[in-house]
Figure (spheres, rainbow, N blue to C red):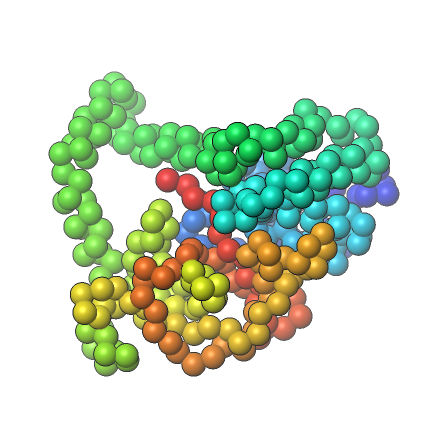
Length: 312
């Protein structure tokens, strides 16, 4: 949006990008604390918003807005970070290291030497950091920021904030089972008299916890990926034989959203189309959640991105 005219986006491209950002806001799941904001707000974006753009929405938003060379350059960073972010994909560190070196070297050529900040240089060391500490999500500061937000919510007024926090934490340590029970009651679906398929016995749930995430029977929190790799759009959450199950539809056609630097399929980003008939799955077979929204090409084709970060 600034700098050399060789890389600066035209006003029409910025407007199109803003339209796309506004269009996907309603499709972002609960795991994203903030809705996407337009580019005029970029100087006020929080770190979580930059993560959302880089790891999840950027490839979709920037397609055919950036030139092919700039888009390829962005995808090299995006793909490397997705590999480093998830232990499921963190198998070979050599390739993300190569991509990050390419990104930093090319960055100076594209955006100018004056743009080579410490943050850009720091990318060169991420692969080695992951070799020592594991995936990026294992040692990022996002969890600390989330915890500070939780602590802040314990303060009711400005008088003696620390004693307030201590009392609230003390209360929670004594009554965790009551809090959990109330959460379960609130998640249970009320007033549903629908006959459930697949011999499900009920009760039905509108929301149900999945590790640090929440799965729902309605968008935008009803897209999940199974351990088998199948993409499922959830329609029913209920129980059978005392165990939680879900009913949902899978997509018949799955392909990569981009093919370079490598097929996006390899890190959980797909194009999906043609929903099939409902099937039954055990809740324990879920691998994780994902975001899902219509592609640029067709309302019947969807952009799918598996959620890799976990904020406690």
